[in-house]
Length: 236
Image (cartoon, rainbow, N blue to C red; front, side, top):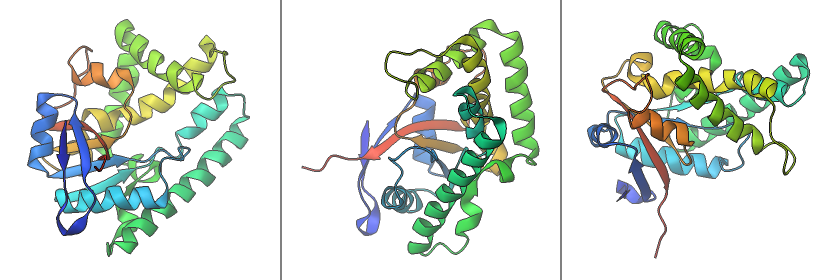
């Protein structure tokens, strides 16, 4: 783990790459993609601004990934009707977008609305579509890969169910589509955004991503793809 202090008074961040190759991508500092979860209170406007200020100071380019429409899969798994699930996902996704745009605007970013990568931006992106289809096919054909994806999904669902209740097979199969729609950003963000390298930044990665970047799964991130746990550094 390293602590990186931004110039100009931006907050220090504790940065933990998940592998040596991830560390190389961090050092190149070409592109950072911050994952911003729509239904996670961790991502207040102030926190997003703090992350954005650090990222803009550290990297040549910064984008923010918001799994907005994909959140409907999780809600359907929790029992919501498809229409209600889609509405909740759409409403919270827009709220999250607004927080990002507000945070970036306060930092003087002129094209703040273009820095958000949600479903509207990704569904017609050729590289994303290719990666998404590849992930779906691998999920269908590779039992070990499928098990890892389902384990990650079960962990997420367990945190949203009443204490002591575990998700059933049907719920996991429904909700795993959320993870499979995120996966392209963990495999090859450079192809999606048109950069040589990219670092996906998040504060709490599930165990499956440590396996992914550790080379333990059949599908592996491209050479330019990195992942780093990025959190505010504890100040003495």
